[in-house]
Every structure is written in structure tokens, then in C-alpha cells.
Image (tube, rainbow, N blue to C red; front, side):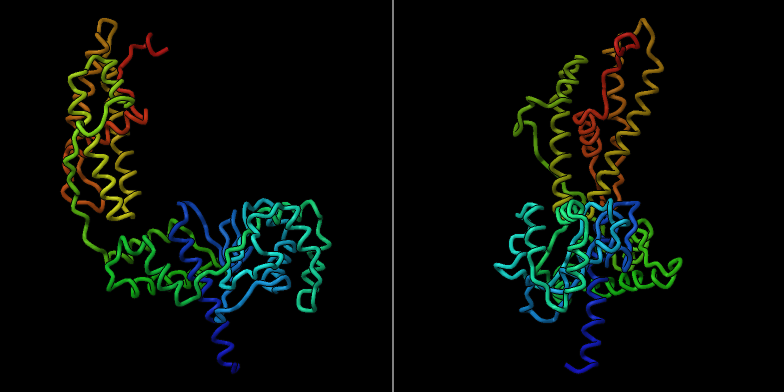
Amino acid sequence: MSSKSDASTKILGFKYQEMVALKECFEAKDGTKIYLECLGDISDGKTSIEVKHSINDDKKLIDTHIDFWKTLSNIITEYDKFRFYNKFILHTTAEIKMGSILDEWEKLEKSDKKRKILGVKPNEKIKAHYANVKDFDKKELENLLDKFEIKDKQLSAKEYYKNILLEHPAVTNTIAPKDREEFICSVFGYLSFQLVTGKNYTWTIDIDSFKDNFRAYSKKYQIDDLSFPISNATKDSVSKTNFHFVKALEDIGYDRKIGRSMDNYIRASESRIKMIETRTSLCENLDNFDDEIKDFTLELKDSHIDQITEQCDTKEKSKRFFDDSLMKVSSKTKIEGVTNTRSYYPKGRLLHNVEIKAIDINLKSEDESK
């Protein structure tokens, strides 16, 4: 291989690392920070990932493979910083060689992992790394190995880009097919720019900022909002037995509302499933909608409770609260990313909140609630 080709494959390895980091960004929780080239190739403060790429399709992870030993040795060298990490991952395009010490790694007990690696006869290439591992505290070594995962046979750069990034739900649920490559290039640019602008040249991706920029970039390519999928499901197809909201209505003597409530609940549940099946990226928006219904209803409940006096029939007041809640939430049909939402949906999601006991429709008096 020429020196230029060799340099190209090294650069491709760095780009592959960015690809894996981008996938981690797509899936990271709010408030997270992703670090590149700091405490591993990719780290979120709890998990450290070492990324190894090869253009050789037949590359095998053998007992003395430098990628394994160097990764393990580097963790030990920085163990004071890594001590409280939950997981260490070796992400590699190579395949574990059958019969090697790494074969069926995930099934081995930590003591067996330690015994196997310390039993390796080191060659010149891994000699220094092996010595570092051998000199490490044996109890700590077991704890480290128990957290050490090997993800072998990972897709190489071209396949990873095509099959993982371009087909990731964060992209496919938001961006039209013809625009996905251009969009991914924009997001790659954002990742690289964080190194240029980072403090003390620490390559940090703030996930909250990443998501804000992701939404900003995606507006140019955004697919149309989903048309609300109407459900015609009815209570006749589902038994009312064991539904908490049914019991709650019975407790306040509102049996005549059970049938319509069942219809709203079932139709809303089916419509939600259809929306998620069609566009997975709506999950967060739909969860936020449920929370908004809950918060609104609980505020309304406070106003109804304030009107209760000792002479009040709390069951009748509970019925009025339930009716008032249904009437007022029925107009709350705005869901981000969805159009033409029907009024049964917010009513059904109110009942979902009752079902999971986030809302109690029974306005007990102060004495009863103690």
C-alpha cells in the first residue's frame, strides 16, 4: 500500500469514529455531553467506546491483537478517571477468531476472562500493553473486565454510513429520502465544528445544543406533518375488566360514562400506535402531549377542589370535574408533527392518565383523603 493510500485509510478511520459518534448523538438522552478523543474515542461520562476500523474484510481478533490489548492498557493507565464508568466497549469491524481467548467473551465469568488474558504469551507488539495489564490490581482487573464489551463484526465505513446513519429513525422519520445525504453532511459539519469552537480544544458535543441544531438543519428538508390516523375501534372489541379508569368511574357513580370513555380510550390508543409505527420520531412529541393533558387537568382539578365545602356531595363534584375536563381538553388537538387530530384523542389520553394513575378523578373531601 502506498503512503498516500495508508494515510487515506487512517483518515477514514477517524471519519468512521465520527460516524459512530453521530449515531450516539442521535440516541443520547437530553442533558448528555458526548466527548470525542477524550476518555476513549467516544465517551458520555458513563460509557467509553474505542472504535477500530479496517478496510480488510477478513481481519480477525486473535489472542495478541493490538486493538484489544492497547484498548485495555489505555483504560488501566487512566483508571482513576475511568473507575466509576459503567461500561467499556471495543467497537471493531474485525471478527473475533473462533477458539481465541475472546471467543464467546460475553458468556465468560470475569474470573475466566482474567485467567485467559493473563495466560496469553505476549509478542513484541503487545509486550508493553500486556505488562501494564499484568501489573494491574487483580481485583480491579476483574471489575474492569466485567464491564468490558466487544462489539465485533461491525459494519465498515461505507456500509455504516449507508445502512446505519442514512437509515437511522432520527433521519428516516424526519428527512425525505432524496435529501438525506445532504442533511447528514450538514450534521457531520456541525460535529467537526465543535472541535474548532470547543474550550481548551476539548471535542465536546452538547446533546441539547445538538438537538436544537438538528431541528434547525432539518427544517430545510422536513417531510410533511403526519395526517392524524383515525381509529374506528370500539369497546366491543375489548373487555372493560381490569381497566383502572373504569373502576374510577364506578367509584364516583358514573357508570353511564364508561361506554363512551372506553371508546375514546381505545381509539386514542390505536391512533397513537399507528402514529408511532408510521413515524417513530413522534414518540417524544406524543409523550409531551400526554404530559400537557395531565398538567392541564391537574390544574383544573385544583380549581374544582377549591369549590368543595363540607356540604358538597363529592361524587357529584367528581362527575362535574370529569365532564369539565373532557369538554376542555377536547379542543387541545395540536400535536407537533401531526395534523387534523380528532377530539377523541385528547379525551382518550386524559383517560390514559387516569389509567396510569397520574390523575385521580375522585374529588375526595379533605377528611376522606387523609
